[in-house]
Length: 184
Image (cartoon, rainbow, N blue to C red; front, top):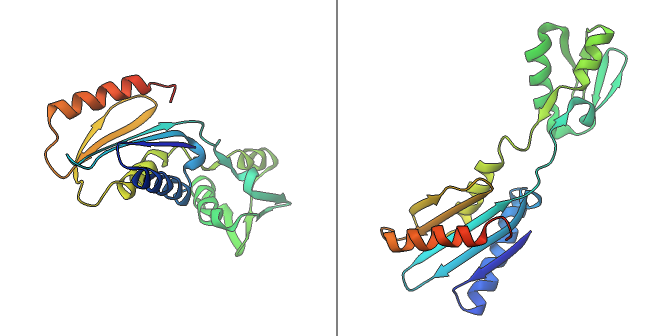
């Protein structure tokens, strides 16, 4: 993920760049972001952040996080155990039982056993936007609570300030999003 920060002094720009990198990494979305642009105008005070969404990981299926055995599944990644159980209980009900912390018993026929492997356990696209918005909220200064979103198909762009955001800043931000387009 590339980060470009403009408008502040060198120290502020470098600091905000590091904050962007660290925040999106901590939230686990950095690999799904191509580029982040942050503009700071401390005199106004106005902050603009624009995040370009890149490739998103494929959905994880039961076969990706388990090892199938006869009439049971061994979970290979413990963090997905609750989700696997929920998906299986929802689909197969009482025919699913938990043998141990990482073992699930199944009473399914051969055809159903193949279908079980293809069930989606987690789709990263489902919560990507809320996690990016959470990151943006952490990056923007605490006092910048007046927000104005700028819609775009592959970007999340928000202009924020301590004061009401005037039409002049909204137009500047919309123009900036057009200039950034899908290239940056």
